[in-house]
Length: 63
Length: 472
Image (cartoon, rainbow over all chains, first blue to last red; front, side):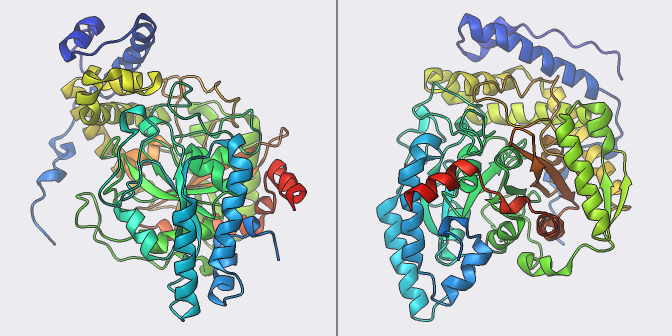
């Protein structure tokens, strides 16, 4: 795993940036979901070989 | 002869072909049952009696003139209400699309119509196939036919409920994280998430383009195979559609399963996640059945369940938000609370994390391919428990509740859920059978062999059978 820490996601600021509106109950629940997303992202933040690059969209040749 | 609603497609097809069963009689019988029972079940958002009867009369005329098209000709089906139907509202069970009337059929809608199926109506779904069991939408959620107090799972909730209650012979669901297999499991039926690219996505309301799959849901795996014989077509207008040779799905069921190697992903349900002991007992009993059928059974190891869930979550949230962003900003009040919140999560995925998730996906696909060098199919649970009470589903998307189904959306593998027994409370148990890419025919063959070796397909939800008898 890399040591690069991810900046915690500022939920209210992000919602405002996207122009999204939520009520207080949704906001509370959203915080839990965003924590889940951050945890998921941490587990896959590892150094990878260029062989794992997702370049399938650029396979322009045909069989 | 069995009651008409009790016939499988495989049983009805020869009768229809031989003209001893009329599509008109069959369709009228299903419409009567829908009228009698669906008020309690909410499987249908929209029933199409006039259109269905007209299609049935047309099918009858064709068959009488010697124009029998095949095993789906004259068979009444339902479509999850995210399949576009020309001239018929396709709502996604959402106020946002309440008046959305497509100008074209989805490719799959068209293929099923060309095969001679009779469309009975559009089926209930979680809002936009993501919203969860919701009570703040224009239509109520579907209920579980095995016990109306319980949840049928989703998102293809109506598709599962309608088949189990005998309100359609076949249905179509979609599956981005388990939305065919979950309802198949809790409704005690067979549901196939095909290999990614095998069934066209064109004209199905998108959720997450790289994880979305359309597929059949039927009482038996044999019926799913009959549906796949029609559905598996290359579609040049779906960029994800695979141009591959089409197997003979129904024909391959006759080959049996003797000598097949079954891999059990035991760590998924013994250490990675907790499951209901009754689900585990159902799987252990199924493995005994497979051994008796001449299969070899070995344990196999994949990455932990959470590895799949983490990558799938980041991808699905990002792609769903990309599709819904504009309408979510403009008219958030037209989404139900659960869909709004789940889609909104995509706003919080960083671009680099989405890319990392795609890289991780590549690694996991390569890993599972290696395991498939040693076994023919994998087996693991479909759901961690039996159907909870309606409204008690909680946050299924929580990271603390890893999913057994999303694994195979991420890898694109064909994955079938079949009924593996019943709990002490009479609710269905289920397991998944998973195969190599484009070996959907083998997966269905294993599922069908299991169903024929056990008696679980002989038991319909008692409530509906009793009511049907009372009505007769």
